[in-house]
Length: 422
Image 1 (spheres, rainbow, N blue to C red):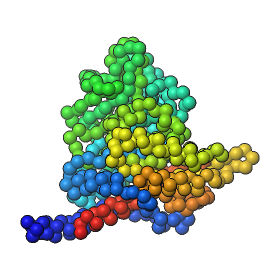
Image 2: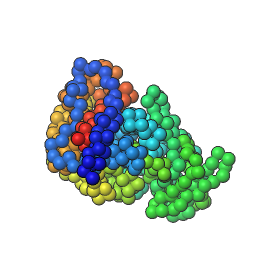
Image 3: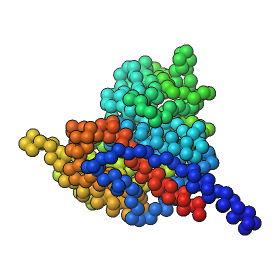
Image 4: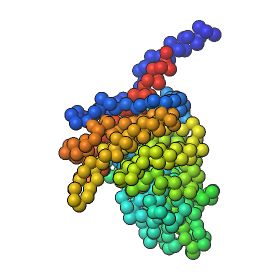
């Protein structure tokens, strides 16, 4: 028996060593500290063992599913960084011979353009009828909000929306995406309006009703869908959409972000945990913070307290969820008298993130230092990687950040593979 086990390990070792993800090529940036592109662990890292074990199952066996949540504000609502990270993760299947089994579907999303705000970059939305929006950045949102932090409502039975999974600014590594199951989250109030799917020929597909959701199943993979309404009165509120492949293994990467949102904003999302059950993340990439640290009243202690409350909500859904904190990017503030001036809260927020990683058993991806530290945002702007507001990045900047985060994550995964091949 012992001899047979040694034989198996001998045969597996070269396979594990040869089958590894390819790292993304990075540009040379003299003003950045790309040599610091690592995930920092100062506390317990055991939750990542569970995450990497699930990744092993997908990459090495073509079995199981890994769910990743990227949570933040406007950096995430725009979708470009999340999209690039997803492309990188799905394309790494080439190194494991699992190219056709990595994509488990688009994941959780929201049709932002229906709320008259910028839509994520990996899909398009077209609407008919009149929709009104409610957001978690409002002190008293008019709708009951869930994971997405935003909702749209209509009382017009003729209203509809169409989703098309077609990225704008398609890039070489874009992974085409499709789904055969859709869960529409929301609720009807004071009436009978409920969502239905309308096919190209005009035929309708009813959903199976659940707890404030409707599940639609399709016989063939879809890359677009039109959601309409059945009923003739009342108001329907949509709070999110989850798209996946029911029978597939692989990876889903769900980006959740609302322009201007901070930790207090997400505390207003009453149905956060209920919706999170759909995603049930194995890894939560926590990038909330740029708005919390934007003003002069920033308190690191309050920031940490609010983060720990958010983590408790995440852990109530999946206690084994690995946590990866993303420190704020360097940023600037603007006033009429001073013009643009550097936000001195950057180092304070960075230190709070490092403490959260140590105290909560999470990893920290130190975006602030990787960028080059305080006042580096102007240099990223000069290089065409950041916008003139000196808070947000250009598409090229977000693509680069996605590649950097992927490389840092894969560095730890390769360590895991090599450690477990011995």
